[in-house]
Image 1 (cartoon, rainbow, N blue to C red):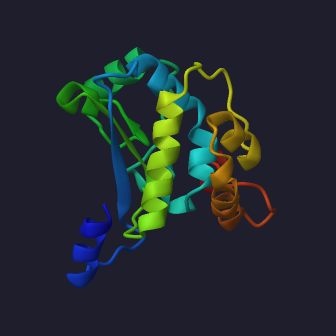
Image 2: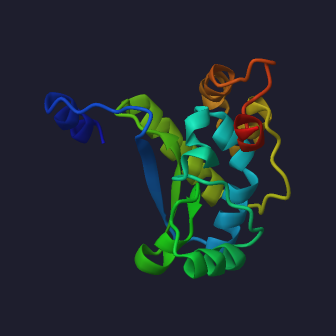
Length: 173
């Protein structure tokens, strides 16, 4: 990843608020139902870690509203759209779940932290019932205590004018 970023930087690549950073999570050796559930339940904090332009208002990373992988997959197949924060259409084509939530970046630390967070979510042994939005609780649950300050910084960076974390619902209202 570091070498790819160096090449992009040398080529003068730039990102703006129209860019997104997408991660494909390989599902060949993972339980896709549990992985989808854990990502679905983690949406609030994942969106809160990103700017408001990554919410459904941009049309490219809409919030998923389906409780199960099957419901999401059926709905996405029927509407033909991959433009969800958690894209289940990628599973049919690539055997991956594509996460489209993060803003565009060529920053190595942001990329690696995001990948570690996402893989920790899908690799977690338990199926999440709920996910607290508090960064310390979220990171502790995932065994990512060393990323608590990073997650906290990201969430704080994107608070609304009232000091609340920007979730999809808050950002589009």
